[in-house]
Length: 270
Image 1: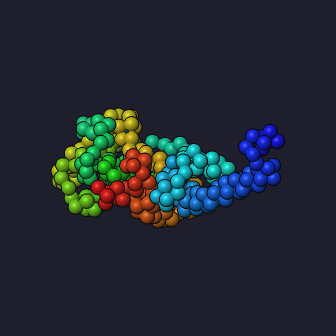
Image 2: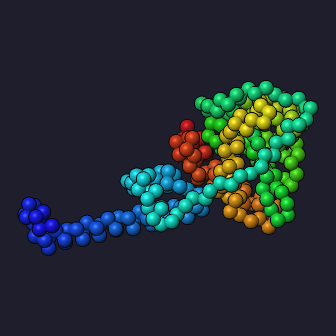
Image 3: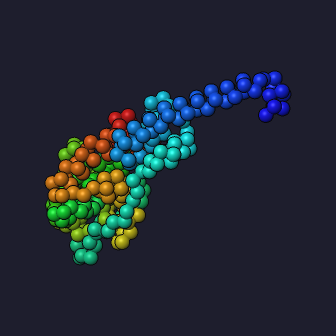
């Protein structure tokens, strides 16, 4: 230490004073960014990890790297909610007519209302299962139609599709892709496709990757909401899912596939 002080022509007391000042600035900077990180983490109900939090910080004018945010989150013990396994709901053991796989895993689009995907999942409540059907626009990943019911029927998926059609102004020639479950193969659902001149498309049997975007949404829903909840009633679950889809996912949650915009924000910016 004495040798270094002589080389740089500084006193030992001056060196220690400089070191304390440097450490103090670093501590204050970390405290400042820690407050912002924790605020964003809690504001998003523990759903955001470092990649999304650093994007939000950049929007606020905070210049920090993803690695720094990850380190600070680890230091504070902030861990985003994690996934759990869930069961398949598709019933493809039927003799109803099915569509060819027109989508063929091509999830690319250039505008809204070119390609939609639909799927069904289940939600556990103390009263029993609640089933959720959704329609997602592949352009923005927005959930544009949804329906919930205590039974997994053709009406469940038909209501979701009709909601999407109404909200989107009844567009024509949209590719409507689903799995080959009996609800989607029903005459009622296929009549809606024909009536509104939609192009039916169905996944290959037992191949969840053909409908990966819908599967991904349900994965996100389960991780960010359902797995950490205990719903006393189906009505309680319905309200919570409604708030998640319409109040958070569509309007606020950043999506990596659309350059970290929220789905409706991405549509408005296009």
